[in-house]
Image (cartoon, rainbow, N blue to C red; front, side):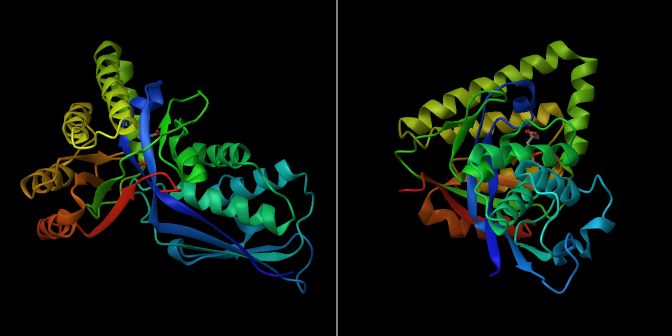
Length: 317
Ligand code: PMV
């Protein structure tokens, strides 16, 4: 049996993080410059059912059966086999490699799940539809943080810019005018579960105020969706700045993210904001393609540990 591989991209949330958990819309796109690759290789000498997993990025080198039952990889593999109706997997090994930084808002957890689900299903001769892959990855996302909106698994599975509302059918965004996003990493890992939990606590304490902030974010996401679909890109920058201010008010920014936002704007970005869970991880800036490299250099000068220049566009463009 030949080795089977599958990959999944990173993602950025352009508008709407956190509010999306509370039913407001959000916009996200894939980041193909970084990815997770999962390779499944048959291991005929091992007993049936044995699955050896290697994932150097997280220092994992172990039998599947030895992982805790609630380990994200255990959950992903168990749910996938159950979905496929497989009682006993032919003996194999699974190697996972990734260039997506962990806990940085680029969707690493969802990408690992999607790549593993696709590799295992192909290895066993099954084809899962995108909605089935996304649903399985959503179950794994619940391990990473208890009440995920589902935006990460959706954009990583579909690999397209999306307008996302929790519980609604996925809406693929039409992007007549592709645009450039510069991503800059604070280098501070920040688990999404912590900021999502803090926002929930704040919402429980003062629901009226938090609902108002979520409404404002939702309104910005709606406006941004209309602008993107009508090809008006530059005004998105102003909406990003306003979204960042509300995320600051929600308490999910931090000094390092604010510094990168300020530096991006000073260096000529049209707009900038944190992206993902916040309090670390990545900042994104809307930039002119020609200035992207010089703005990236300005961000490195104030502490960005890594920068990625990506384009938001439809796959066929
Ligand atoms: O996984 P991250 O850090 O990209 O954050 C996901 C976005 C949140 O809105 C904060 C959480 C969610 O489930 O949508």
